[in-house]
Image 1 (cartoon, rainbow over the protein chains, first blue to last red):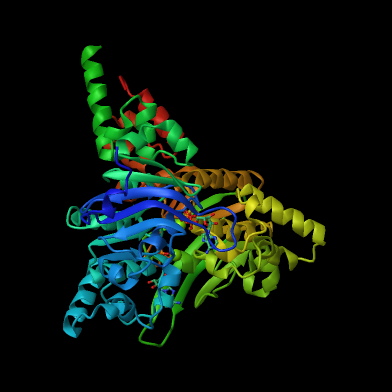
Image 2: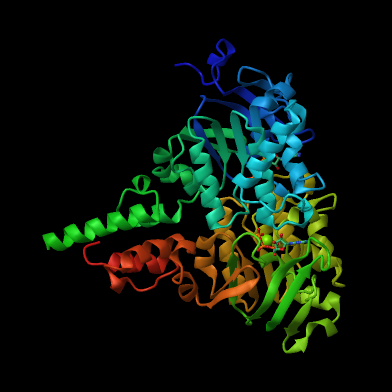
Length: 286
Length: 271
Ligand SMILES: Nc1ncnc2c1ncn2[C@@H]1O[C@H](COP(=O)(O)OP(=O)(O)OP(=O)(O)O)[C@@H](O)[C@H]1O
Ligand SMILES: Nc1ncnc2c1ncn2[C@@H]1O[C@H](COP(=O)(O)OP(=O)(O)OP(=O)(O)O)[C@@H](O)[C@H]1O
Ligand SMILES: [Mg+2]
Ligand SMILES: [Mg+2]
């Protein structure tokens, strides 16, 4: 069997590959990441979960060269972010975890344009892209607001618009919905769903229900990649969930308690339908 | 303590082109020893509302009353000791060299002896599962670890009302569950908790009453069942499942918390 990440040392068709990556923050005894290997193929939608301090955001920072691995190798579209960070950032865009810290410009529209400025996009196209991204996140009318005066969810939408404006092939989202309301969360997830196959997505979250349609889920705990599995397999592995401080979403927990297959029932609608079908067949039988 | 807001209006940047009327006449009571959930869409006024509870913001018009007394007549320091507020982005308020020093900052203002301060600090960190972070720099923590440190600082004040603005955003699922249990423990000890949250599933588990805001006004306030069954599209997963079944199975009733919902589903004939 080929070790994940290994193939990319020769070929270049992977979106992202990490091969035996380790990293420690200066002055800390515990490594934040130890010997992590995985690959993202173009068009894949992959989730990342795990306990607080598990290494998720550290991994994110290694992907665009903000941090450099102590050992091992990261490649993004065949390029090494630790030697070619600016090239890599044209292909891979990140929505960072803390929407409060990311916003730097005086007005919302400048903030959304910020990531485009180093890409050499012509002015008119830049304006179009910014307007489109602001529309995509539902923030028309906020262009001249100061980012510091926005509500939590509004800030998170600005940060997301900044990423969308760059239109990278690879989107890395670190807890993108943590401050959004239920409908905003659904909108963002549906939007990401429309990018399916066209873009590669790495989506970090504490909400497993956001990942039920993903291709795979990576579990990081204590800096180690402890699992790389389909959502079905992760959701039906009670021990693995518990060991990694994960809790089944409400719909799946209800299904499990009722003796229905949790991994197959992804939404309240699907669960309600399964319960109805069962009560009806039960009535007919008895 | 009973906290009451009477017809509170709040306008940001009044008289400028960026004027925003964030609260448009909100009346609301926090009863002693209850968990009050506050929900509502992005920008509906939740954070603005809770910052009135310790007069971090003073109403443009309307009143805030503490046990019937106008809160503006109380000493600010006294009010802030009794009403502890954890901000939506508490990480940005971390400042000290170690987590322990950071958490100790607020209780140290209370003229407690140093031993008592230390005990409270370690206890607060411990209940948040953050004991091992005490000696670390608050700036060298992960997102969820920072959040725990920030919440511990307010817990260590031992307020009579704990006001939490999106406290579980960024906490891992098991920590979130522990934290919800902690909220219920505080409630049982007579402390009121105001919980602002987008996670309706967690509001369903702990709230005694829920207030839903929309565009700066109270859209609904009442028991979780009263508020959530009004509009199941804006409801926790339990309510969404139950309301989908209600049409053909009215006997299911109006369960909200997980345990009640499970019992109601099990009681359905044949399920
Ligand atoms: N700037 C830093 N300096 C030193 N250590 C850090 C720094 N940032 C994070 N760490 C530590 O590195 C480890 C991994 O942190 P990371 O931020 O990657 O976790 P995470 O999985 O993103 O957690 P969360 O779910 O809380 O966001 C943790 O032990 C954390 O305390
Ligand atoms: N400092 C400020 N100056 C101007 N307007 C502001 C300021 N703070 C908030 N607002 C506006 O007031 C309205 C209410 O904001 P608030 O932060 O109370 O909303 P929220 O319900 O907490 O939203 P979220 O769920 O996104 O955190 C929003 O439209 C916001 O843009
Ligand atoms: Mg993180
Ligand atoms: Mg808010």
